[in-house]
Structure formats: structure tokens, C-alpha cells
Image (cartoon, rainbow, N blue to C red; front, top):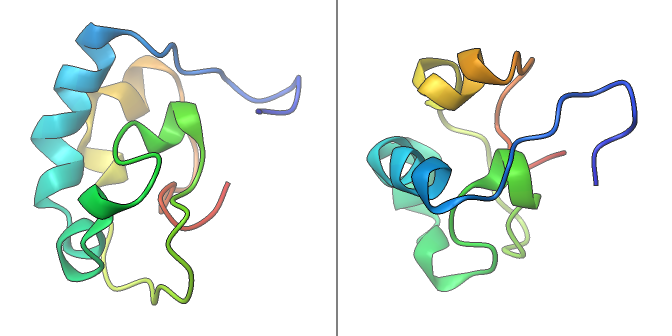
Length: 81
């Protein structure tokens, strides 16, 4: 989970719907077939993908409304926490 000084993204159906619009268009998501690994969405709220050996090749996180709404920093939440 997030450390106490980091924002927490709520795991709600509304947030997952927003996530589906962004994560599934991300280069990392497509290249590494992240729909096949858990969690398969809402990485900023649920943690990094169980896929191992990913190379970071692009990131949509800063474009996602959840990034702004929850005051997130960084990106590549599918790869690192």
C-alpha cells in the first residue's frame, strides 16, 4: 500500500472506468499485454503489475484525470510503486 505521506487512489468502479480509458492505451500496457496480469488496471491504486521484466517505454499516467485528482507524482505505476 501507499506510505502514509502519499496519496491513496480509491478503488472504485468510477476510478476503474477512468483508468480503462488511459491505461489500456498506454505503450507499456499494450507492449507487455498487462491485461493478462494482476492487477490489470488501476495500478496507481492497486499496485504494480505482476508481470516481470518490463522495460519502461512510455507512460500515460500524467494524462489520466486520476493523476491530477489524487495529486499523484511520478508515473509508470504499472512498473513501480
